[in-house]
Image 1 (cartoon, rainbow, N blue to C red):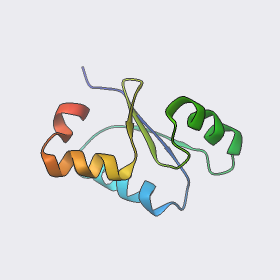
Image 2: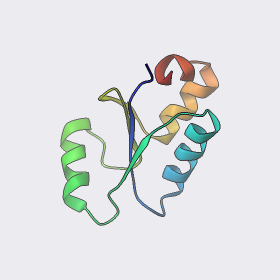
Image 3: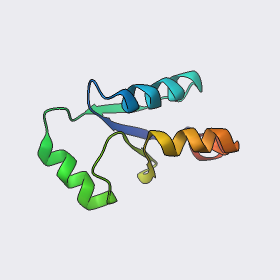
Length: 84
């Protein structure tokens, strides 16, 4: 069974675009939740994760981090272990 991946994004965020590109290149299915016009949702996420930026990426309801975090996982060869 594949893992459930959710990514919270802003429509024009370059880090969000980069994170989605990596997920797509690795053929990871994900649900994107665009919160561009939902400042209250970002505040809610900040309370939950301690991060006030997007993207915010969750795997099986566990907060993984943002774009830099998944790029680092990829560079270390740990990406597949987290996402697959």
